[in-house]
Image 1: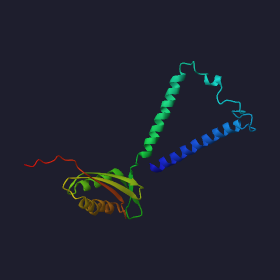
Image 2: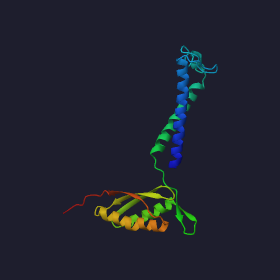
Image 3: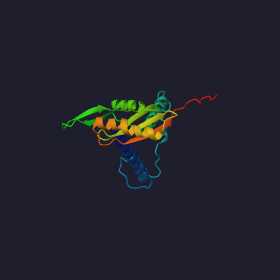
Length: 195
């Protein structure tokens, strides 16, 4: 998903740049009174971009303003969707597992995330765990969010996560390494009443 988004971004940026250069060049050529071909949209410095007749051509039509508003609304929605897509981190859908016989098996990313979450939650002092896979199919990376109980030691939680849950995931998938970013948070709890 990230690669596709990067290609779409480059294409849109290149297309916008090309349109701006061509449009700006056409206006600049007319403004500088350069010799332009007969099909050129503007012929000289006294020519306007849109004539009064062109600007008022559809004004009295009943369908004109609803269409303009709908098109502009659609452009705004597409721009917002594109902007939000920039900040969304793509999750890894599958991981390639080497079976040892020259072939590769495909492991669903959600399945591996679920097993890692179950292993991490089973640790002493961990209330909840959330795991997401990123990276490439052949070199996945994990992001782990651990919600720790008030009595849990963060150092022990990280050591156990690395030695158990992540080690099991590396062994079962045959990966030489599984880079992990871990975020630790304390679970909110009520203060105990002391008597």
